[in-house]
Length: 145
Image (cartoon, rainbow, N blue to C red; front, side):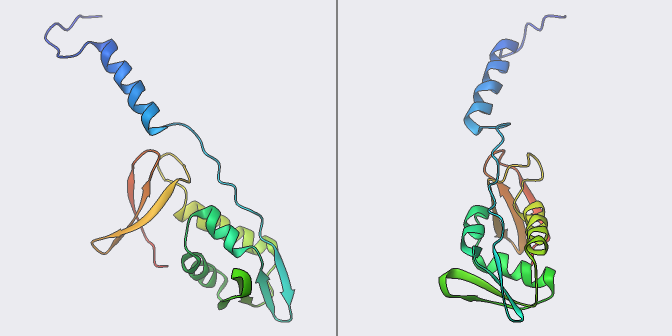
């Protein structure tokens, strides 16, 4: 290897600096998203998502964001009822709701760069961004909820 003599930093110093910065950002450290399985109870022509509040808290998203996404994807309407449960109009099974929540997580929770669930959604200049708190990336998304 050729030796560079006019550089400001030694190669070993730069590599140590990269390792230090990676440790500060926890980059590469995988955190798992623990999404509770949906608990659905049928009441006549409605499906009640009993643990809706827990699901929203684990996703770190507001109830209105998740509710609007479910309404759009399931082509239904819903109401938040007692104990922060979600009442969906129509007969839906747990597997239907789990599949739709999986799409929400893939599109609007996981970082597109490092796949970390440690993200937030922020609007800047009429554009919605998903901002990762792990790798600090910022990606525009098509978000209407």
